[in-house]
Length: 398
Image 1 (cartoon, rainbow, N blue to C red):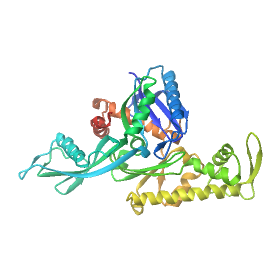
Image 2 (image 1 turned 180 degrees about the vertical axis):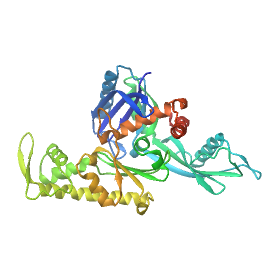
Image 3 (image 1 turned 60 degrees about the vertical axis):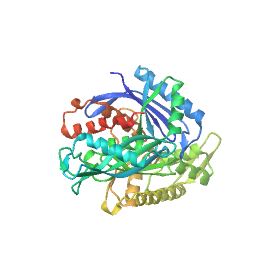
Image 4 (image 1 turned 45 degrees about the vertical axis):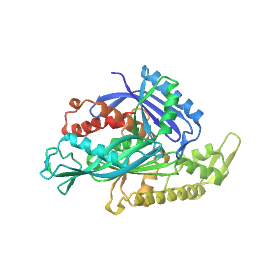
């Protein structure tokens, strides 16, 4: 079977993966292409020519490794280029009521979409039910077969900025590739990292990237809140570069060697560049990094409050991305600062086994599962979720 291809646009790199399902529990990556670039900052492209070159380079590398020609590709949508709208919708079945059918869910989603419409400059990626309300009982399960007079539901509608898709499509046309579907990067990542049983109640994913931190709340197969903080791994290095008056490359290396909560005492280290060397006290490096880390933690806590996450209820929280996790001791630092039992669970891979590739593997995993025939999934719990993802394909397809 020809490998499925995904294109993941990050704030500092572009990743193209080609792969197939290995079995029900894993995937095989036949080809991977990674190309660094200053892709975007906030919701704007920083260097379109650089983005063009990085996308072409990543795609060609993936094609060469997989020995296959990519004609269609699934595109991830960063939070900075997306919009989420939640809508409560009710559908009546008359005074006598009737049995709820599976098709009624489609009608409920369509009615919800008609209610909210499409924001100017955006296109719908997908519409996902969060929960259903029948006879006063709330459940994430589709209420098919239940006799009722009325069915309500909370529907999450995710949109992508049209200029984002058009920009990437224009680049891909130069290499003869079409965008087959779009998927929100946080949704793919969350459904891969967070087990289904932990998504029954709201779970949180925090992805600390290179230039920004993205957060989302996920319930079942739906993202119900998103937030972006303009701080990532770059800002840690930038602070060191400015404060210590060293090159950004030297600062980046010092950041990678740093260990949170380690007592450095009077130790020093030498920061080297091509033109000079400078001896710096480790305590000074710690002061700069921990100041920025404390700011990031405070902003994460503030974002969780704005997304109505009840921190006191100890929600399930996962951490991903290379901006913070690749600094030793950072997970324990954030756990202590936020007072949460934060988990990291990047599946092991033979290559690219690093938290900064979570969104890329999450997208590939999601697309492969959505495309998998239901009969290939023998276990009921997995079959139910996979068939639901498969049903949602119509909403993802461009």
